[in-house]
Length: 449
Image 1 (cartoon, rainbow, N blue to C red):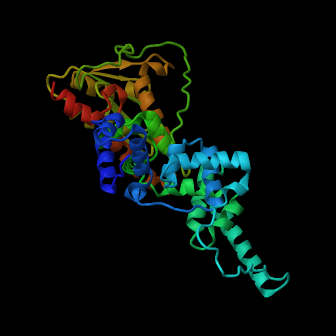
Image 2: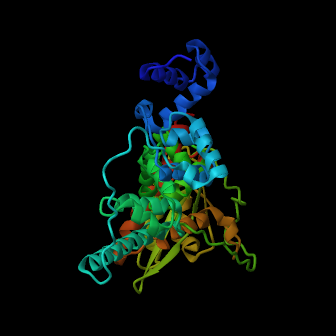
Image 3: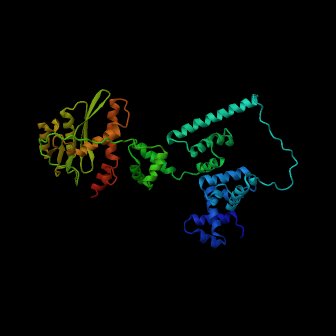
């Protein structure tokens, strides 16, 4: 078999990595065997171009033992192990394995070549017990152990358990200060395991850009998005990954959706009518300004109360108008209604649905609806399911804002409430709107129709 230069090997690897040719085709074209081409590719993936430079000509018994331990612990093949440790031939490792099994550890010791050395070997004796050198060595050892366990505790705080990867990561950061031999002893892992993880830690993270995008989306939405929504949002950044992959990456980044929805429990009271239930739980609307729903909710913070009165368009779920006040007076609903009516066009035929709250029974409220030819609709008494869409909005609002964030003052809460409604209308995707926000759906779909 002829020898191949580094350039020949690189050309063969490049042909394979383009994806147009297989191992067998490349091997036949250059007059070699398939297994050799596979070895070149694996070596290049593990070591880069440096893997083709001439490796060790003599290996220590400890190095051989580390290689065999790595292969046994990780389950790597002979070829993968040879690529990892830059050993030219996988058969060399097989030979070491057989020697260890048949003749023991002494068989792995390298045989000296050439004339024996005339230099006398001097064995350095350990420092005497109680000497300054012994005490200094003991202090350094304790400092190393302290530094190691501090870093292990820091790295494992999010993971929940101490893995070999975490141990190797700590050793990697401390190896500039202490010897690797001493660090792996404290860690309780073989050196081969450490070197295996060191190579992996030095590799370029192929998900680095995706992780940055995940963190940006997660913090932009203030922890309200889980991995499914983040997967959909990533498509806008040009990333298409399986949701399970995104879930794994979020776990690695210790990012979890902070929203925990509370189960809604309705109460059904006596059935009565103030205005007919025209809507009849038909929450579907084909166009804007066809069906609106409204209600009032209360927030209690810092010993104060705030009341929110929004109106929601059932076509796209958009909050088209709202009012916040410290008291639940009629002006709370009246001002909201006046603002919402500005959105109407002369040709619109609108149904406005609410519960049987006293605001909606006021003559002033009902007259405003009549003046603008708006059909009034009311839920049955004590049956919140008749107005489930606005109740669902209140549930989201409290889960994604009130229960999720800490507020410094009532003014801070009001500002965050304003920001949330802006976020809900313009950024928060909804599955039933083809993963668009309410405003995006209105501008991209409805106006284009």
